[in-house]
Image (tube, rainbow, N blue to C red; front, side, top):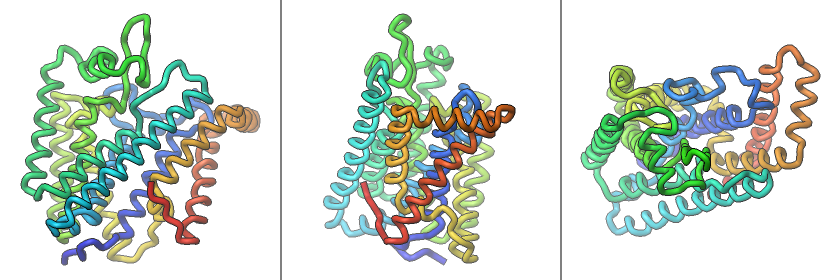
Length: 355
């Protein structure tokens, strides 16, 4: 049975909310020197549970567009206004990311301003995939996905090395944006940004895969999606023999592997929440996702700059001196809980802030 065009599925909001909660958890440990291994990104090649968080979010950005943009794009006359709406929202997210980094640069006295970031990547992917959702039909969207994966694979396979700082992704960011990137050493001229320009090709593929998955979900093709998810997992692992799973480079095998897992997670949530009526855990975060992420990021900067974060860590470390990683985790959980209370308050009053 197909899902009504434009209907809002609680499962999508819930899964998005759980993803945002995971973002806050892994981004805000009590102390970065004491973190349980699953809550850290892979040092370079590889894929930890933490490496699933951002691709899941971008995947769900695409899924949401299948329900919010694609049905309205069926009216050709509505497309220009719809495209303007997509671009306007993406621009607001982009500006929010730039201002957030300006605040961090100023208050935390960072050595340089950073242009790229999580919100900036969300904005770029939302804008470009949103335009594909408005103006392209599914066959062309599939073709765009294949071209993205094949073209980016060719660029990486043709590289001399994929080593940290020396790979073509990092070298392009250095050439175009240094020193305004996440990591840069003026003495060596080397650096890297995990949300830089070239690796956005992989992130776009993840978002586009979400758009295509959402359209299949709207059409009620759960069995086909389950088979697709299993196939993506298998192909992603097989392709990792030639190109590694790597979040920093957002490699095509990483796109396929995380995309397969995201499809399985979405199908499970759809089955349990939409069809069996299970509680939509995470929904309160999901309906104010960007607002919660941005607000939490600003608070993190303010707490860090004021010294309150360090003070909280000193107390936690003093109480649990032999379990420092767990103490660090408890601070992160407390931070998530505080923002859950904010999300609960907003949802209880039907306040849904759209950036």
